[in-house]
Length: 252
Image 1 (cartoon, rainbow, N blue to C red):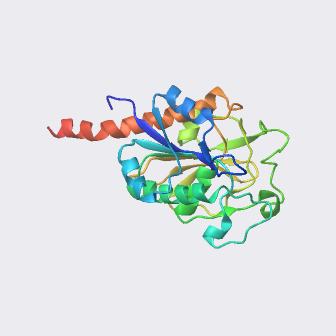
Image 2: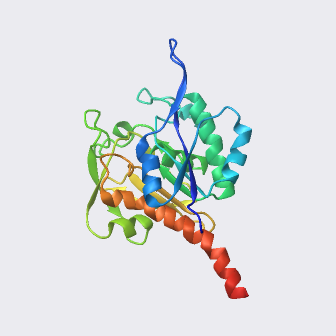
Image 3: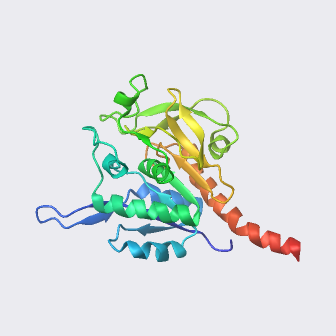
């Protein structure tokens, strides 16, 4: 790929309230990380024109589904738990259609936090909606008093995360109370917390490049190693773009 890849990323949304206008927003860590990794970030707001999503994706080389509030269990046929704080419906409706089209197109994807949970649901998996109740013996994955809360991971060596972190114990920031329960068939687990909670996934499909993190490598509490996940994502996209050209040269 001669040019830098264009990487889309969704963003959060807050509706108008008591005279304050509605606005979309995104933590700078996401687009700063993509820029440093060699990509060009393209922020995609939750437009109400869902029919335009396809045209937006036509222009992109990859996408980052970012973290945010909770997915609404009722949209997947489950009851709303008292611990769930659903993201704004406008964002979730947009994100769900966005994720469906990313999946259908097999667009290269990095999914973080709620983005990881969303793509798992879209592909047929499901979620634990509150770890302390669903998995009472689990380690703490959220500390409301400490946004830099961390726990350790066990990483599969033959994976993207394995290339980034190598052997030995690693620690990542953690601020989630929902997690993957049943993993969708399209994915494989590449990292877990010691309590078994899934923290990293990749695609098991040959035609789809996906890396997913339940933790937040874009966070201000992230390490220099965490940032390398974005570099692996951009490098993977560039390799995929170069592959067809290489095959054509060999054939010639």
